[in-house]
Image 1 (tube, rainbow, N blue to C red):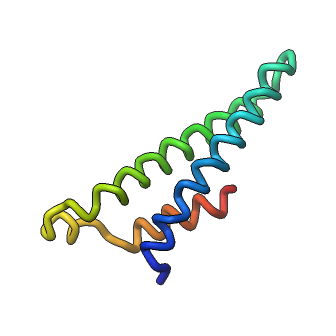
Image 2 (cartoon, rainbow, N blue to C red; image 1 turned 120 degrees about the vertical axis):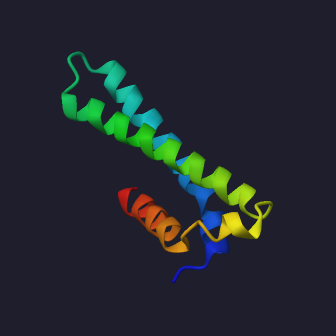
Length: 90
């Protein structure tokens, strides 16, 4: 299983990539008249991934301050899957 600290350290880099992808797609979408629906869908997907990563980052930052009972409710496997799928997407 992946090391949770390595995952937490990688989230800011993925957020940067998500921002750049969103900005690039947005620039193309705004400069192309009658942009295809697939371009708008890609823009939406990039924005949703950015929002997911922001939530993931906030969770990782707050995790150390949570009571043990709350921490036990968070399945590390699910966090790893979310992170892995984010990496694969980009």
